[in-house]
Length: 312
Image (spheres, rainbow, N blue to C red):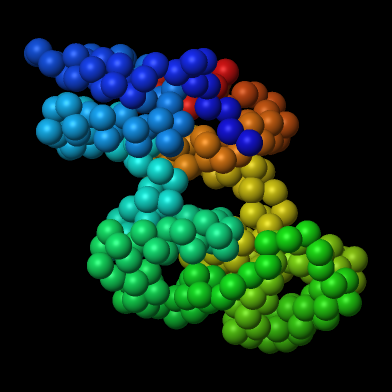
């Protein structure tokens, strides 16, 4: 569920394109007008505006945004303008090639099989290379095996699961981790990349009832670094993506300084998917609204843009 507020009825793409062109003209850019238009249009409307803009002004809207804006506001609007699958492909490509493996892991491991298959196709079209090839080239070890498994294994997306199979998987994970000296990472990779979200939830509750310890804690104890981050992302998104992303946002904003790139990536990528749940979980877990937190950690146009996407 998204929280994106779009005007009813929305202006025509042509009207929006003219208004954007007007905001770009003259000395300096009327950034608040740009935000008030683009932050309140869904991905289909944004695509129509971009087409109309190109037709009318023989210019690419993203290129114009890029030359008119700067800093976090520019990054946020450039990330927001495309559709979700194009955006995911862009984020993952940039993250892999700039060694931001944490961001690449977060995006890949939090997506559903159908989201992955959509952005994989676009990845190939946009960058003329396979996602699997880049994952193989820019990652290594257990993380590489986990990500490759996750982007190549077809997984069931429905709600049915086999309780007995889930209990067997829980036993296998216990034997591969807490029961032995050292960890059999291959077993963790096989189960975490090959099972549906509902099945993994069942594995998780079977694990806890059989061994009195949560599977998440076992993952934390037995693994480390980006591999641990990937396993926990898969596990937590199987249980409740909204809660997972609320935690990511809290982490990005707590302490001294704010991790702006995580903050903008999470807000932009979840705005049209499940922001309602992210906000609810944030309020429940941290006792204040996500809007309040963003307000106190950001400023200017960047703050205005994020708050427009979060909705109040």
